[in-house]
Amino acid sequence: MNELREILKFFGEMGAEFLHLPGSDPRADLAELDREIRQCRRCRLHESKTHYVPGEGSNRPDIMFIGEGPGETEDQFGRPFIGKAGQLLDKIIQKMGMKREEVFIANVVKCRPPNNREPQKDEVETCLPYLSKQIAILQPKVIVCLGRVALNNLLGTSHSMGRIRGQLLSFHDTPLIPTYHPSYILHKKDKGEISRTKWEVWEDMQKVLALIPRKRT
Image (cartoon, rainbow, N blue to C red; front, side, top):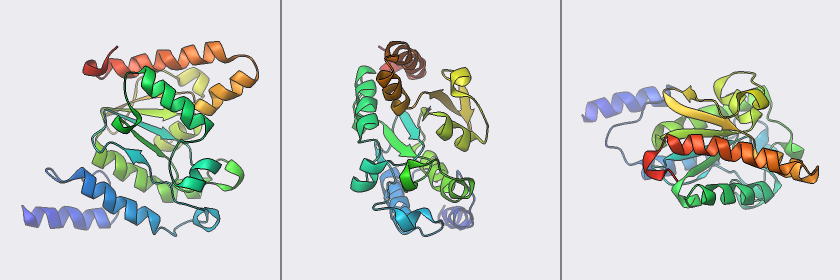
């Protein structure tokens, strides 16, 4: 068994993804990955960031929420989704009958892009292996992609969120459901169009809950 562990560890260090050892400690694995992320200098984003934002939550979550990248508040404190969009996400999680600490929240990139611009292709390609490793360690029952940028960068697609939201997709055999980013809901609120958007997101979250029978409300 020790020999197998060394072999898998070797291939993991060589860049192979989704090699998670049976019986390994996800908390320790996440802590090790967290340290790796905080030492990363592989792309330009680390030059302008204040803090790395690896992600946070349960080490065995039923649901993993994935966003685009840290914003200004997240960069300031080193935590994902704690600004206005994060506060709305917290309310959505609570409405689902869960607590923030019961899920895991992360982003495609772990450093804030300048001026909250979309992460560029080379930045995503550099950072995406960290997210892939997180998914492999966490083994969530379902992934929720928050917004078009998160979905298309994770899956390598070019979907329109208005057309794809709520559909059952998959990421390496893990069920995945895309929905609007909380900031999109807030944008609709500013335009006085929030009711329909909130209802659509809640429809999507009911589909997520249906994949987790014991959490269904």
